[in-house]
Length: 413
Image 1: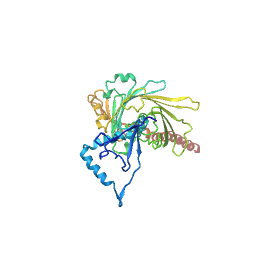
Image 2: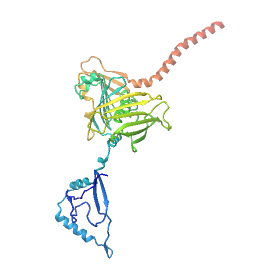
Image 3: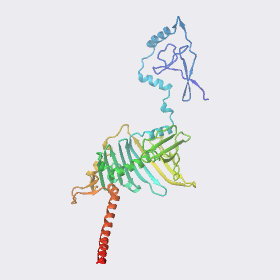
Image 4: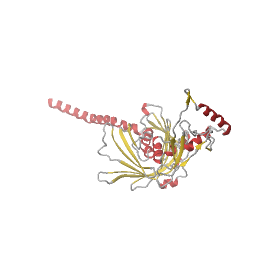
């Protein structure tokens, strides 16, 4: 055990004090109630209680006059102290809980309740493929997910605010949705109209929210929705109601107390066993680059081992930078409205009542027109196919039936 040194008594006036009459000290000296000797061993504070001696006269505590005298003298000889100084003095003796947390604990807190993400730049690469670059801004009621493209596209991007340089953008703020695909911009406001519930903008946005964003904010675990993980120690278990699957995870730490590896598995709700056709996913965390949040990994490798032990499905995420906001950000941080006034956008497309309203920009001769929304049309296609099939059968069958009837009539004659 490391040598123990006497910490002395911490006076509320921010001075080390050995005055037995100092009433501002954290604890009294001598034979006072619950007297404590504070000692330090490295960063660990150890309290050693001394025996408490009670002195009573006719049932009254004989120490009360002494305590009163101590308080009076302390007011005369000790400096006044503010609540801030008192807090600082006590903090010197009692290290805060946050100082005792390992990096992995801070990592878990981030995953469990991510702060508003002002900017997160990362790239994603699958085995044997070139990386694609992404820019994410996120908070509970909003999202900006920008797909920049490959490295060539990244080099062409003037700056992150040049929205025309993104290949695709999926954005949302409360009930307002935006989507940019190449040179087309889609806009939709969710007014809780049932016939609009499955439009293309909502459909593609939900895919990003439920797959792409969890992959990065859960550091490789795409099976759990963002902010849905609740840790019990270094493990978690949850039900993803969107996919009707349970998800289990186990985190391990390295020698520095950092998140080292996350092993995740999943299965159908109602079955305690993992699906036979799936294998546990492994997320390995590496810290080659220094991020502003040092407890987060800068590289995430995800893969699973098949029945032969062969590594499969390998992907790698590299986080280039991350910045968090102290409070939720305004709509301007996510909206794509300013794209509509640029010359690089062909048309603005508004989703309304299962239709895409194409509004060509000024100067173009094409008049606005209506086109069925893709997802809605696909959902209605089976019905239309049945109608077409029945119609075709009737068109073929009716002449044939007429022919047979006429033949029978001729034979009778």
